[in-house]
Picture (cartoon, rainbow, N blue to C red):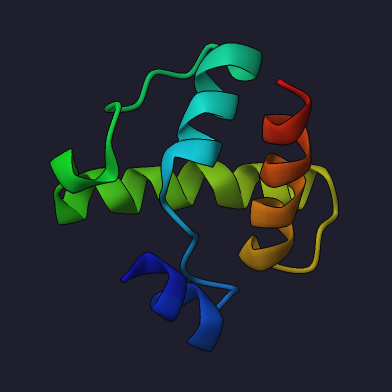
Length: 77
């Protein structure tokens, strides 16, 4: 579902799957639930706020670019 949301509004919604969760835990020390199916709407909102901060800090265009950034790091892990 988050992939669909991100496709239509990439400036508001981020993709939530194992890749960014692992990257944020291993590389940033940010704790998130281990599987996206365990998330509530509030959890997802908090997640989107954090990745929006990353987006702004890295001067990326939207949360789709953040997802691509996470994937690059994930593949290196």
